[in-house]
Length: 392
Image (cartoon, rainbow, N blue to C red; front, side, top):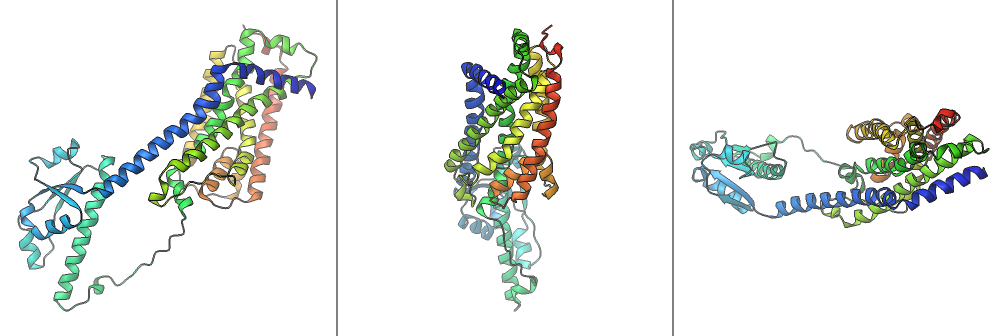
C-alpha cells in the first residue's frame, strides 16, 4: 500500500498548490452557499415579521357603506386608504397588495340579518401580497363570527349552536422539526458540495494528467494499478469530505445568526449532528469520487471531462436530491439501502431532531460502500487499459 500513499500525497500536494482550485473547492462553494442562504432567509423572515407588525395598508371602495366594519378594521391595526379608481389594475401592478370593495346595500342587508358580501381584490401570483391577503381574510372572518354570534344572542340562542364540534389540536412538532420545512435544502447543499469538492481533483488526476502527458510515466511504474487507483480515489475522497465538513460547520455558524426563534423554529447543527452526518456522507463522498474518476477517465481533455462530469452531477446528484427534497415520500427502512437516498434521509432526520436508527445508518454505510467497491473495481479495469495514457 506504499504506492497508494505516495500517489495520495502526490495528488493532494499538487491540488493544494493550485490556489485557484483550492479557493473554489474549499472556500467559495462551502462558504458562499451558507452566506447566500442566511441572507435570503434573514431577509424573508425579517420582511414578513415587519409586515405583520406594521399597519395593514388597505384601500377600501365604499367605506361609507359599512362604517362599523371599517371602524372594526381600524381597531385591528388597519390603515384605511382612499378608494382606487381601478383596483384590479392597482393590484396587478403591485400598487396595492389587496383592495376591499363594499357594496352599497351592505348596511341594509346586514341590518335585515341577511347574508351580505364584500369583495377582496388581490393577485394570488404576487407572493409578497399573500401575508396581507391572509391577514385581511382573518379580520373579515373574525368580524363575521362576531356578527353571527350577536344575531344569535339577539334571538335568545347560544352561539355554540352553530358550532357543535370543538376541535382540540395537539401539535406533535417541535421547533427543530418545524425548521425542516424552511431548511429542506440543507441536505441538497451537503450532497452537492460533496460532489463539487472532489470534482476538480477527479478531473485533474485523470483527464488533466492525460492531457499533460504525465499519466503515462505514472502508469509505467511497477506499482500495481489498483494501488495507483486507490491513491487517486483517496485524494479525491479526502477533498470531497473536507468540503462537506466545511459546509457543515459553516451552516452551524450561520444557523445561529437567523431569527428562527421568532417564527417558532430552531436550527441546531451541533456536535450531536456532525459525527452522524460525517458517517453518512463518508461512503457517499467515496462513491461520487469514484464515479467522477471513472467518467473523467474516458475523456481525452480537461474540458471534455468537465462536460461529462457536469452531466453526471446533474443527473446523479442534483435531480434525485431535488426530487427527494420536495416530494413528500414516507421514509421506510429499505431506503437506507439506496445510496444517495440513504444520506438524504439520514441528514433530513438529523436536521429534524428525529431518531436515526443505528441499524439504518450501518445498512446505508455498508450498501454505499459496496457500490464504491464495485465502481472501484471497474475503475481499476479502466486503468489497466494502455489506451488510458494516450492523450490523442
